[in-house]
Image 1 (cartoon, rainbow, N blue to C red):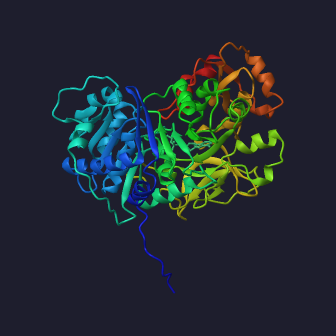
Image 2 (cartoon, rainbow, N blue to C red):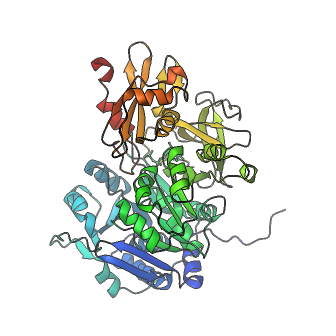
Image 3 (cartoon, rainbow, N blue to C red):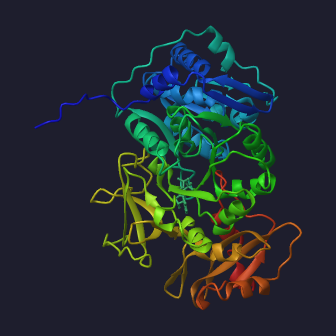
Length: 538
Ligand code: ADP
C-alpha cells in the first residue's frame, strides 16, 4: 500500500514564496563600509525576483554556476535565492583563499559569472583572465571605495537590477543542484560539495528546530560565519524561512563592529567560529544585549571561552558540529533536561561536547579501517561517520582522491570522537591533528582546553612535533592575554593535575598569534611547518 499524500517537491523556491507571502515586514540590515542599509523581506523578495531576470538577461545557462565573492549582505542573500530558484547553481567563493585556489575552483565549477563586493574586487579582478569560463563580473557596490576597472566585462549590480523584469520561480525537481561550496582544502585541492534543493530545505528545517538554532518570527539572527563558509551554516535559509529578521555584518568583521551590531540591532541569535567569539568577548562583556544563543563550531569550542561568555555576557556558548560536507549542521550541544540541576562544572563539561545528532542525521563511531563499531561508553574512540539527507555522497571533483562514503553507505568525517550512552558526541580531534606518541594518541583538543583554562592564556594550539624516540610529542603554542604573563613552567604546573603525565607538552612556545585558515580556524598545518625542525633545535 502506498501513502496518499502529495508529492510536493522540497525546493528552495518554496522557502522564497513562504518568506514573500508571510514575512514581508521582516528586515535585513547590512553593515556596509558605505553605511548601514535596511530593507524589508518584501523589498528583498521583489529585488530577488528581478535578480532572476538579470540572470536571464546575462544569458546564464539553465544550470549555469553563479559565482559569488563577497561578505554577508542583503545582496548576497538575493543571490542565495535568485540563483537556485531560477534553476542555476549558486557557487560561493571564499574571499580569503589563495589566488591559485580561487582560479582552480572557479574553473573547476565552471562559473559563468561572478558577483563581487566592491570591497574585495581587487582580490578577484587580477585573476579574471585565469578564470576561463567567467564572462562577466557584476560589482556590488558596498561603499568599499575601490577603483572599478574600465572593462566591458564589468557590470554594476544596481544598474542591472533597475533595468530588469521580475520573474516567476518554479523548480520542480528537488534533487536538482542548488548550490556548491568547496572545502577550504587544508590538504590538497579544495573539494567541491554540491547541495541539492532537497538537502537545503531539509537542512533549513533542521536548523530552525529548537534542538538546533530554534528560529522563530521573534528572532533577529546575525550570521557572522561567512556565506562562503559552508552556507553560513544554513542561517541564510533557515532564518528567513522562520520569519526571523537578519543582520548582516558586511565587510565590517572587526570584533568591535560585531559587538556594536549585536547591541544596536537587538540580535537574539548569532553564530561564528571560536576565534570570532574570542575577539568579540571584551567588547560585549557587560553590554546590554538581547542574545539568547551564540552558536559556535567549525573547530573545538574551548570550555574556557564558553564559561567566560556565561560569566561576562550572561549566556554560555551553544556548540554545534558539522562540516561543509554535512550542509553543515549535523549535531548540537543543547543541554538535555537531565542536566538542569547539575553543578556548573558538569554543565560546562557537557557544553564542551558536539552533542546529539539533529533529527535527520545518524552518527556512529567505528574503527576507520575495519568499520568495527566502537562502544558508546564515552571512552572508546573511533572515526565519526554520519548519514542523512543533507550529508554528501560524493565530491564534485572525481580527482579529489578521497572516498567520502564507506561501502555500507556512511560518510567519513575524518574526525575522531567518543559517544556517551545516549550517543552524545565528544570530538577528540581531527585524525590529522591527533598526536601520535609512543604508539598512543594524544588529543590536541583536550590539551588545548586544559591550557586555555589557565587565566593568563588567551589561545592555545597544540601540534605534534617529530621526536626520535616517541614518533611525535606535543608542542604547546600559547598566546597570552594582553598585560598577563606566564612562564613555560607556570603552564606545565597548571597542566600537571589536569592531564596524564605522558600527555605533558614537550615544550611551550609563546607566540603573538595563532595562524588562522581562510575560515578563521587555527591553522595547525602552518604551526607544524613553522616548528617542523623544533625537536632538532631543542
Ligand atoms: P575545513 O576542513 O576546511 O575546516 P569545514 O569548515 O567543513 O572545512 O570543517 C569541518 C571540520 O571542522 C570538522 O570535520 C571538524 O574537524 C571541525 N569541527 C566542526 N565543528 C566542530 C566542533 N564543534 N568541535 C570540534 N571540531 C569541529
